[in-house]
Image (tube, rainbow, N blue to C red; front, side, top):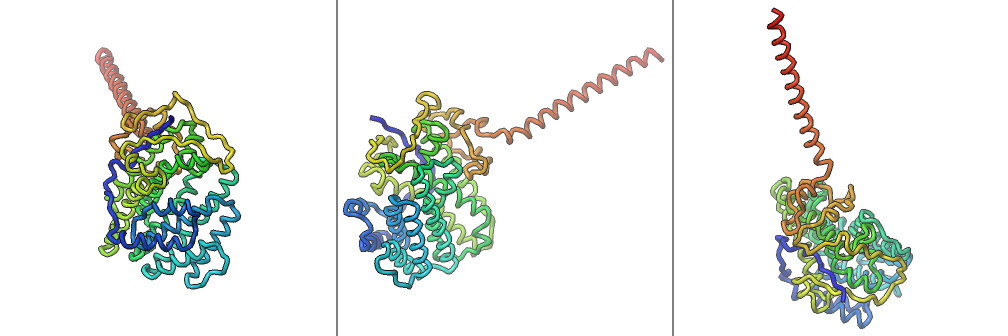
Length: 420
């Protein structure tokens, strides 16, 4: 029976698992609220109820709302999903307005969620949430179009869409509900980078965990594992390990930068510190939820989290996907366990020049995790070597020139002795 090994993406992540102190009270309340919409069939509702969601009531409600949207949008085409998106955005803009009779259930669920959320959030946080949720819904529509057209994106274009379909941006907005971080601080390049790196880590964490169930039902085109296998012609295990390396580099960049935040003033600095801590905690929470919720690994999630070995599920549905995904070479680029040295071919495989995965090269060079760190020469790119090469040539040229000049002068002086 075929199996693969998940990269241990958070094996050195400093943010530890913990539950919100209000979880035990608000989680059941939020689950009962979600059940009132009958958004799932009996089988899906049973599976849904086994999933646990961390966070206080607003956070739990948002997670439940995401699942309602996913349950319905994942099986519909672009036009229907666009109509769903319009309903949701109208509900966000009009939280006190009753929804029309016979409307899709997501509209009323969104309205009730947002009506409660605005009672505990600042105006600036509300504005950012609505904007990011618009981006999220637009990306969900784009995902539906890709699914309908059986489109497999490139790594770079996939991440552009996935950074919104992951739902991280509106989730991050919940961390701001009681904060009042000014726009000029919120959009500071340092905070923008930290957000982007965390979002990419969440995309990676979710995609490697969800891949097995998605490939089994033929709905894995919107998954980084499939995209990497397709674009780089890798087998499943090589793709998993390649993606694990990308996660390590992102983690290194985040951990380096979070300790070098600029100062914006005492009051603002305290809020920024809380926000950045929340970003880091999201990486841990996403990983824990993936294994504890039974959504991807059933009751064996905690065991799989330890040994990382996953049995490849047989395909049960195709969802209309007709695109063949190459299995990749079986001998070339085969990658061993995550703790072994990584082959040069995988380390230097396609690296999107504009991707956030490779923006801060110095961070990646210095802070790739030791367990899967790359040899120094492999990590340095050619542009990083050019100044060293040119400097070396310059020193050699100057040395030879001075030596030749010395020999010429010395020879001339020796000759003059005999002439005189």
